Image (tube, rainbow, N blue to C red; front, top):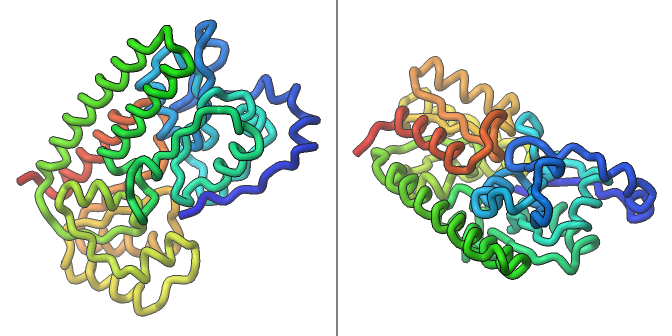
Length: 299
């Protein structure tokens, strides 16, 4: 899906640069500038998911600002602020998802941070479709390694720390991957194909009609036939669970959740950004994997 935005003009940015310096940078995947040690590398990411990965690699040697950092916000209707553009302009490293997911970020970077080092997760993934690569653990590891490489180029004196950070993060991902691979193979319905890569790793089959997920993802009207077919999968218990993207709920998806409740099928909520109170990628993903395991069981 594409995160849409209304970009502020360059004139407005110049006029508000002074005010931008006091912008709040706290929250999941972000570190407050006041808490960052002198010499910390300034990094801006499109979402707090990638911000949490950067923080895992860089620790206290990075100052991270994630532009999408509100767990209650809808990533599909994100609108950048002058403070966001100013932050990107001052970044040494920028990390985006790519693949059309965060086009707003690419545009800001192209216009405001051409000299910054850049990491594109989708490009690193080698995937040709489905931009939701933060649910592909192998890609997340590639991003962490690339972040360590770029940070080391920016701050060579801290290379050992960045390398160790990426290695430790990789070890944690190995443990998480092992948990995913123990999930019992099953069939599910999803409201959106956001966790597709995670389901693939787990050997879980998604039976949702493509017409349904494509319409939800593109925020268009879902064909009546697709709604009926998807509902039947739940009502007739042809699947073991419903996986719901809780950040893009609407009347159609809420109806599926209600049908699952009536049918006695578990509903597993998955999100596109870190929820409130969670600051680490592995912590966040482990919680979701545990919920999926509770719904489907283990091998």
